[in-house]
Amino acid sequence: MKLGIVYHMPFWRDPDGTLREVEGSFARYVDSLAPYFDEVSLCVPVLAEAHGEGTPIRASNVTLAGLPPFDGPVHFYPKLPAMLPRLWRWARGIDVLHCRIPSPAAIFAFTLARLASRPAFVLVVGDLQALLPTMPYRGARRVLWRAYTAFEEANVQWMTDRSLAFANGAALAAKHSRPGHRVVETTTTTISAGEIATRTDTCNGPSIKMLTVSRIDPRKGLRVLPDVVHRLRARGLRVALDIVGPPVGRPGDDERAAILHDADRLGLAADIRLLGPVPLDRLLPMYRDYDLFVLPTLPGEGIPRVLLEAMTAGMPIVTTRVAGIPSLLTHEVNGWLVDRPTPDAVADAIARIIDDPPLRRRLIANGYETARGFTLEAQAARMLSEVSARLRLPLKRPATVPAA
Image 1: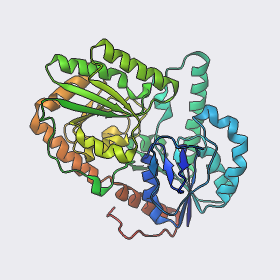
Image 2: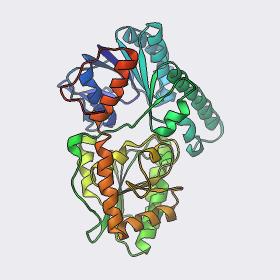
Image 3: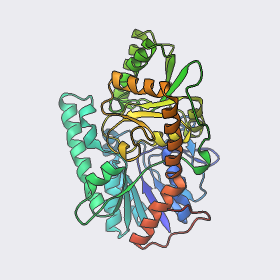
Image 4: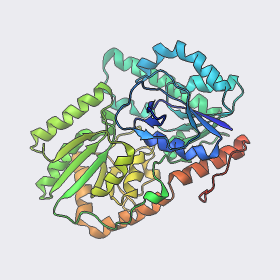
């Protein structure tokens, strides 16, 4: 059984043949699905040269059906005429298609797979429509982006209506479900069972080390973080913040510059560091060096996978009550949710956790319990059990399959 996966995350091939993905979360996802198939073929952008360290694909049965590199829809559509014959040949050579969406190539791969009578299942991981209010475009660029968003939203719904569909979090599952066609809720993750830490408390040192892991763009709400640190310092709390993640396009570069400018303006240049992207294999152990995780994200998320990564490392979490996050985090149980990520609201939440050890320890302990239910192994077993039953596919059974 040959699984074909289409997505927009770029890969490259090392001289020794190893496949590496730029970010890492998708590579781990592919590795979690690979034991159920004889071969997994990735239809993804392929870079000519290495881009940082990357994260390797570890499964030996993963192959690459490369697309030309593209950075978003602006670069994708001019290359589409050359891609379509390649997509058609690829679609006819697989047994089942899997699309992570939204993604520019997905609608074309999905349509061609239907023409080739190949079954498909999709996973909705984000909500472009919910992101519109946070996009910084003006004038003609804003009109074009709104038109593209409407086009992609229609594509996503068309695919979910015509396939076995999963969605990252309750909000996305509800959005795309229709009478007689339920979208299955899931939670994307990057953690393995063996990576769950054991520490029971944090925030006990002379200073508090806070961490944010996020792509840097206006949709993530990171602009408030310098003011958050400033308010905490004004309360006498010795806090510092590291932000891990790459800027996304020009809006991301502008956002990064604004964060650094605000940090300098507030006298916090030494206390707020932007570390850039860190490969996932190095990032996951880094979480354990920090005391508290903060993500003031805005609408448009499914469930950010970094929340499970922080739980796995034993970190209390402060984040926003948006999109699918409340389906993973319960306020004051395994995380602290703010309704709006204003500087005051986020600072108040962080101060409460620092000043209340019993609350902090409860958030950490319940976070571990949540993480155990959302490992890569458990997610893949649940998802592919549905795929096998509902698409009537004879999938392989891994040597160890966790209880669903």
